[in-house]
Image (cartoon, rainbow, N blue to C red):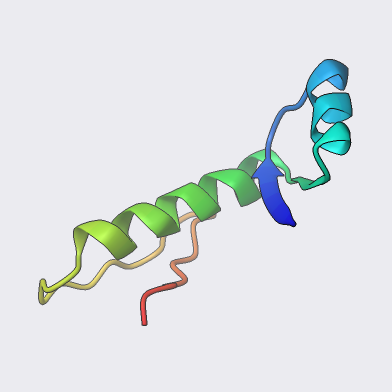
Amino acid sequence: MKTFVVMHLGEEHRKEAGKNHLNLVAAGQIASDDLGLDLLPDEVMKGLDMLIFGCSVFQRVTRAH
């Protein structure tokens, strides 16, 4: 099974996901933005000696290993 974190999802898409046995997590605006903002630096920063600090409502959580 696959799980998708979504911010906005219409009823038609929700039904289609159910037919295809997909899990959906409807996250709010800030949670969705944080997830996307964390994934981008994980990829961009590979091999770079750089730090990113969270500010305002963004808290940096690295998913890189």
